[in-house]
Image (cartoon, rainbow, N blue to C red; front, top):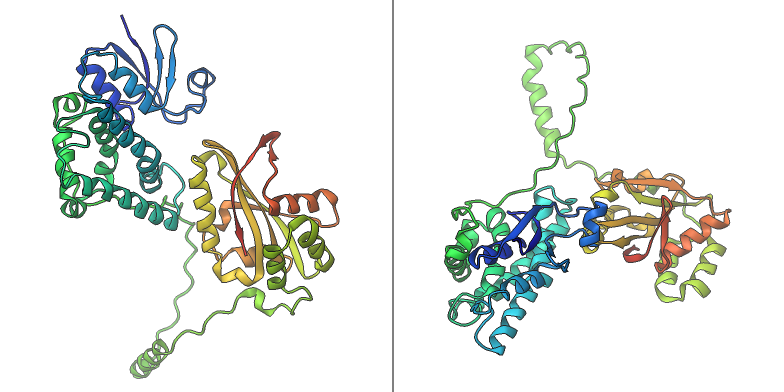
Length: 418
């Protein structure tokens, strides 16, 4: 008789340790193949977040979160040694597992998922998450310098659980150079991976030579233009003379292009004055009244921005990083822009919305300095309308929830561009 159902995937890093323990202890656990972020009504009754893995016992007992499930399944064997010999061992096991779930797994996902096309790619965000992950990995490297295993002198659930997570980065980004620089972690991983309890549910261990790299999606080729008539060849006698002229042209540095908004006349409201007022004064009582008093619609325009691909958003911190990367690429337009963009909602159910003050009447000249500006929809606001003014104030205060397509999303995180 089945002990219960495990909703997950055989190659999912968080599911692997649970399957390994169940197999080693002859616990009849039925694997129900489930994709991450399954938002079907039936699965959400078991896992309200849609995350995997989750567990449903034959008695109706439901458990979510990989760490809790792994401990519960392991504890079914009263003679298990995987939970340590002492209370201190057990506490240390929980410590390592918690560190993996709350810190390392988050950074690894932020680093690797965008490279594999599993979440939106932002170069700066990926680099930041890579640095964070490597810093956390160094904690293992230093600990394993003087220890064979994470806790005690034999394999525990901390090793099984952590090695399960490391299967993902070792298959994707932890390449030959990384392994040479991290001999202690690599030795530990090989040792634990080849333990019968793990090798029974994993393929033969194979390392990668080079880390995967981001491959941008291929764009459809634009239709070829008809070839224009080729210009007549210059007389041969002038060929050498023309070559010399070309070389001289190549030596001259190209003039620095001017920003398209640079030609606008100086406005009566200076952008930096507003930015200082926003930063230093109470928004509702002082800053916004000052703004509306000095704002002139013939000099500036107000815009709502909506991210076009909300269905691809996953973790809130990753969406906030996406905004941060977009803002970083707007640097060339900093003196012509002010605004805020925020994440509303929760993991796997969120939207990005913002409001911007733009010099001039068109958003594109200010925003197209960022290659990903077309990932956002721009809607011009009418400052004479009460609802548009309230929208701007609510966005710049970043506290209230927002309604998008008849669904209300609470404020989660946001960033100011000033």
